[in-house]
Length: 293
Image (cartoon, rainbow, N blue to C red):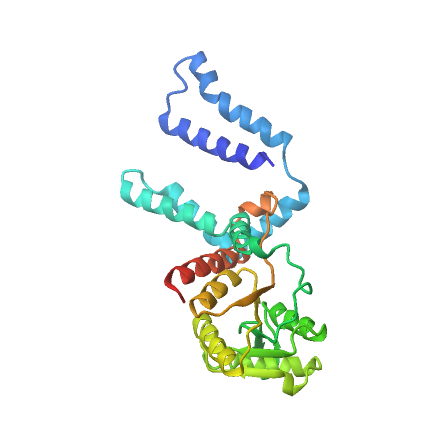
């Protein structure tokens, strides 16, 4: 999709020429000055997106993330250039906002985290004695009943292994403020037919580091030597790094893949909440791994 590049070139070239105001003195400079924007305009016409893309892009622009993006651009457009430091700072803010909210950037960052596990068959693992499911796959609904969260595939993936006879013991863990994630996970497994004696709980850990440390202690206590760790694929590199620090040899079992390589379209240029979420998760994982948490 080359038309987004053409739009950027068109806007930039017109803005630059209007600021310089030196394209009128003679005919030759006029043609030279406007050759680039004219070619960009032709490119836009040739590669113009479908009406569906235009409608979707408009819809995204009136969402909060899109509206704020337009507001920042509008403020930058009307700012006086003599306040150079403010112009530069705002330009950097717009650039960072555009990148962080871009669905292509978010998808690529998530994909980089997930690539090591992309080809793994979820049921092609050798049997293990137990699997730990890191918290985050469950939540309570407004009526206090447990339900799957956005990362609920973690809970489902462990259940499929249990059903296939690959993981006789499932270990639920995690706590998020007042939410007992381990208890929520156990309740969901009960509803899926898992026997109570096949479930163990680690309800005290509050983050990934504490969950891995508690599971390592449980493995030593139970004498387990063949275990697995189930979590979202984008979260798995950090979890396995923490496991190695604990001296825990575990099989990485990925779930909840979210990365990808979205096609560059008109809607993909507009910052979205979904893209901010993907970028946030990816950066959070990278920073967490650097600080060992």
